[in-house]
Length: 522
Image (tube, rainbow, N blue to C red; front, side, top):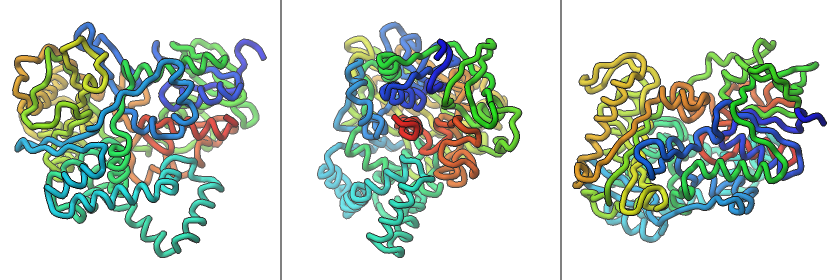
């Protein structure tokens, strides 16, 4: 081997690229990761230059329940811990706070949740136990479908064994229920508006809406995961996870290089043998793994190849808006029991979540957006100076391109200008401040990131969409990112496509990177 020849070349250092590289390096292969930015991690980005010195903010991704409970953690957990990665968790993963001031908190104790839900409406707690218990009972089958390579003999055998075990009729009924929208699930299962409001916003975090097909099943999966594992963060910030993965790669002889952008895939008789970078450097590799958007891969690295899919028809979802606050002391919430909750949604229920998501999908600034409020300092005190506080706000229903303001009070332009961004941030802050008694006293500084800002920070966040493309059924599961793709193959031998635009989709699970690494012998 020459200095520029590798067994595996990974393009992109997001969670999936780093997981794949770490697993392959552990297997003894020679691995190189290249990253176009001057830092690694993609959405795993922690900065102390967001608000004030000493305040460490996760600018994009924050919560690691998918990783902590997934196969990548099982494969790499000991190595990551040895290189300093640690989780911080609590017993109150989520809550909802409604406009009238009422709140409902989820704990990691199922019996406590059953009692709390039954107190809101007779039978709602029992229904919750049936919902999360059903996910628990189906875990092996369900999580294989949600996490493993779908177009495979193993999945075919899994389906056949399931059909043999339960019968074709019950299997058909299972899939029918799995395709149920969250609105149908919540309205037919729970009488309490508070319980409905607790779960309705969570479907936005998997790129869906309350009316989207299979959002009900994803809601049940999220309910199970939060109750079972909490909403952990990484000590010191999400960027520490990227740093630990880098150390695992390098400790096994791999390399990670930043500031290097792949320009063209080098194809020889139908096989990818490496890439040429933007500075005309050639990197040879037996396998190339691209953690990119479909457009970057097919219109960029592979252009102009024959028989490439039409990526122009690939649709992206709503944009993401981030808002961060440095605070001068403890937060005095108007509702009781929220002090130690990891993630609080400010929402009124199914209709409010549906309305804000629909407005964003139509290009409108939502009149009353669904707001997710994180309190990372309550789990990890190292995030800010002693006695201070941090708030991490995610608004998962912002338009990528703006057509207007649903409230009619913000003068808009199609692009996210600084003026529009700050005006929308004012709207979000006004809603938040209604629920915190001492807001004016403790507020120190804020920083807002529009979908356009996020897209500039990470080229994979097309239009500020953090989910790698709309997660509707027609471009999910075996149809992600397009119907012709078989798992992670690209139609070019030895060139693989991973990332949020591929199965199992978005999130911090590292699933596609794990699957490809296993396929390549890790």
